[in-house]
Amino acid sequence: MKAMTVAIMALQGAFAEHEQMLQRLGVDTFLIRKPEDWLRHKDGLIIPGGESTAMLRIMKDEQLFEPVRSAIEGGLPVFGTCAGMILLARGVEGEERERIATMDIVVKRNAYGRQLGSFYTVAPVKHIGQDVPMTFIRAPYIVSVSEGVDVLATVDGNIVAARQGNQLVCSFHPELNEDERFHRYFVQMIEQAM
Ligand code: GLN
Image (cartoon, rainbow, N blue to C red; front, side, top):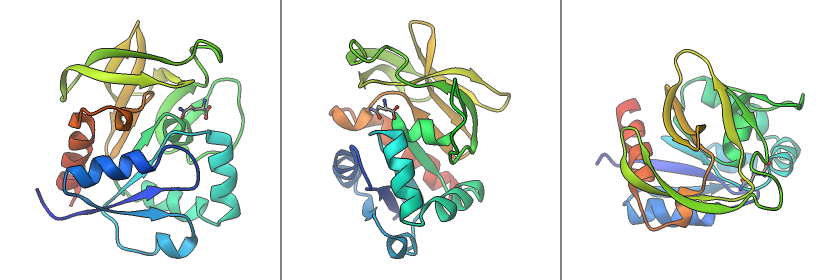
């Protein structure tokens, strides 16, 4: 593996587990909380799960929204999980809010309902393998993708993971299970981009 540094948005939500997972893979990481953190060299970015509306508000308050958006637009490899996926989506059903909106997918928030929205399953993921553990927490899913988006996984007929160029997203929380394959796939994406 090439030496690389991955930045992790740490404004809100499940960022610490991503950090631990990448460190287990031997990847250098640092956390983004302030605009000055963003200036450090990075080969990739993780936007974690949490609450997309809160994360977006903090990104804006901290003047991180524009620099992050333009870096992703410029090709910085990014991995968005759950709320992170919502922020990357061009469209969210029934919502007009501004977002990073760099990926040609439309998502539905809290798609499994607010009460019974959390569950665990395993499913195959294209390019990654069989029986990938998937922890869903009030998760969104992808309702439609444009041409050029590679659908990586579906659960009960709904799209839960996809890739478009240097952007990788999933509905679930791969950082909350021991299985490292999803993060390894992102690391390979970064290597190819370097
Ligand atoms: N329900 C959250 C949202 O809409 C996402 C949940 C998660 O990231 N686990 O932002």
